[in-house]
Image 1 (cartoon, rainbow, N blue to C red):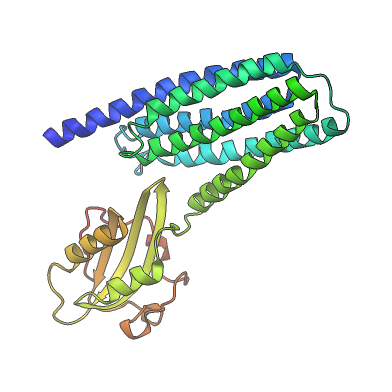
Image 2 (image 1 turned 135 degrees about the vertical axis):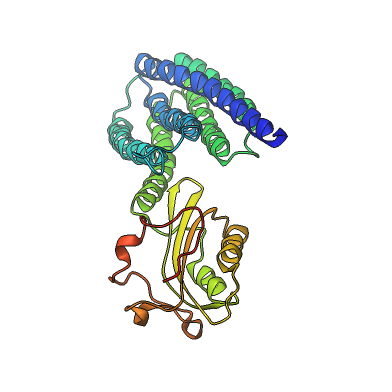
Length: 328
């Protein structure tokens, strides 16, 4: 019971940190947009677009914490965990459009730079830098105990670099009058955001397509299962990601004569310990079904996957998720 209370305390503490950081970052994003328009600074508007990714990341982090508290029901057997991934994909798509517009506008301004109010630009950038420092201070306490909080911390840290870039641009314009520095900094921030946005879009799409998690080596996983005592062959091995950091595994295992009664428990423990996959469904069979030609044998550990056969419609349904084996 003590562990449960401790865990609940950490979750509540992380949620409070995230809410405060969201309030600070979201509020300043609005100030930065208004200030960018008043100061006629594309660098400020570009940094505001970057800050938009931080606001979305913080909101997603809070949503992930709250969704994690909701119990599974008959309508959503996996809960609402995919909401985080859908929102991330939408965020990435929207930011691509914003970044493309900023780069286009910066290119136009580079040749005909308009007047920029460097004083307003500098004041807002300094406040933004301070806001990011406060948010980082809030989140640093939870970043080592929660990957969710760590992701938000890194977002705020990267935005602090954007604010630093705007400060440099404002000071340069103030003391040299080089107006072209403003669109150059805007382009730099846009190019800084685009790779991160592309990475987020690729990862979210990969998860929505139920691709194999990038941190799971399928050959190593298959070899470990085939090397376990009592395993003759394996087929229908599938691993996918439900939401960030939460993987799921299903597999059909053909047993050898004399296989231990604890085979399913042993395999489940090995998968958890080596690959950190805690939601596993392993179905055991005395012999492969009519599609035995598709099974992966220990002597051919390279294996074959993705074949269209009678078991395909059982990939995600029809299994006992209590980690029990079924014998055919």
